[in-house]
Image 1 (tube, rainbow, N blue to C red):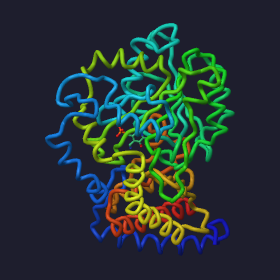
Image 2 (image 1 turned 180 degrees about the vertical axis):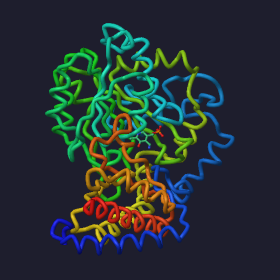
Image 3 (image 1 turned 60 degrees about the vertical axis):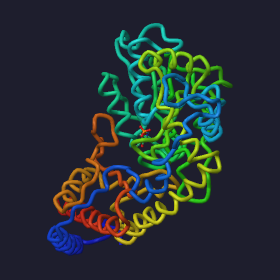
Length: 422
Ligand code: PMP
């Protein structure tokens, strides 16, 4: 029963039914929130042992007193664990404080003020700096660009990564200095960059000599199924293609341990690591090594990380299943929406009819269901088709999530039938 096959009277009947459901929804006085990809309390509880670590034994394996200054590259045992998980040489990986976003921010600011390895001048002295933004994408990447006056060019995000035809064309412009990529379980579509796309990104001939791939692997080990998808080895691919300094790899334990009190990682070529540590060494005498040590003690090794992630999966997978269940039951077959069914990560990306996303988000808000603002997943907050909505199922308890999804489905049907009726 596609909306296209319904008569005007049938669409009117469906609309009226949804209108009645919507009025009921408003009466319910809901206060639900599926806006941001925050871990739930149950997930945070999995790492509560951190609260008692490292205890009185605050020296790391090398005998360093973690309570004191120093060690800008971070704890070596922690770097060893994540070097294996991120498939990079340990010498090319540093570990920092609680937010990979802060490293991304620093990388942009350093590039703007000082230039990167291979830059002819600081980026801020260029007439224009442009970043390619596969979209829908992560709003905070775009916010950093906006903050520092970097022009954003929207590229379609496809199932296997950015639209490479558009990327190939764009990088012939020397103003194009970078691209944002979330290679595994992208925010918000869940797409995974294929080996072929990664290899092409690594090998691209770019007009800018200092083109950078911001390879934000925030969801590297965040699988929702038993399959542990392996991220393409962008550092190795870039080196093999003669562009060793091209990738900036980021990751963190924000969604492994504590989202506000985890540890972050940066990997790149040896030259880029020297460039970064030289600059960051002016900003800090060293990272929070106590936090790094307690992460080593909690996680132990690579298997420890996987075991913890399996526990996260047990909590998260049923929530993602509820999202699929409600969307299929309520919207399936009507041709009013399409949505992703990710195999990992934190989000589901929902596309409603063009021109309806803002209306759906407003309807939901008036019924007490908070959604990420329409357009948030696009540069400058503007979805050219006004159709994309990001769903973040992780935080609410499962029954609240179900109620929110039912409400959202009602809002989608109401907006879509309203639009048809003009
Ligand atoms: N990158 C992506 C793609 C994310 O979705 C998030 C969290 N929403 C982050 C980075 C933030 O990472 P961190 O907590 O390490 O700053």
